[in-house]
Length: 221
Image (cartoon, one colour):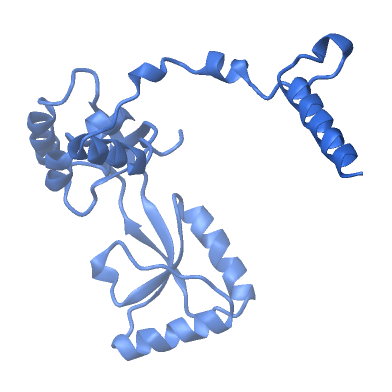
């Protein structure tokens, strides 16, 4: 009996060896092909792979973490006086040709629905609270001579301001009046129609000259 099991074991080992080595493939018995030659074919110049040194690795890391470039935009200044325009023209002369222009323009008069002047900051704060309770918005003034006071809306004509004041009166506003906050103003406007990252890096001097007004996104015409 022992001889039988030994013979059976030898036959099984022989059959397995013949199966593994492919001797039985001609009769349809062979293991599945585990090789994947297509992976080797898909490799793109593996011999070109190299390790980066510390400096190169930091450069790649910096590029990967850098924010995407900001898309180009149109920027413009606030209205400039003749003196301001002359100073801007001299400074902007160093910018790329065609990247900027100074345009003659005019700002219409500014009429507001005005509340004030108030005796002091406490009176102004009290009025702000009353307006918030009525659900009314207000804004600070652009004309210091009207301070301390509030604007309940700005308009390009007196007629539009009067119309707004009538609507506000229906909502409980009793002490407002229409005044001209600013007259029509003429001057020049600095315009930079296509400001990309390269041009942005050259605008520090112009921004410093313009001061608090700086540059803003161009208004839609």
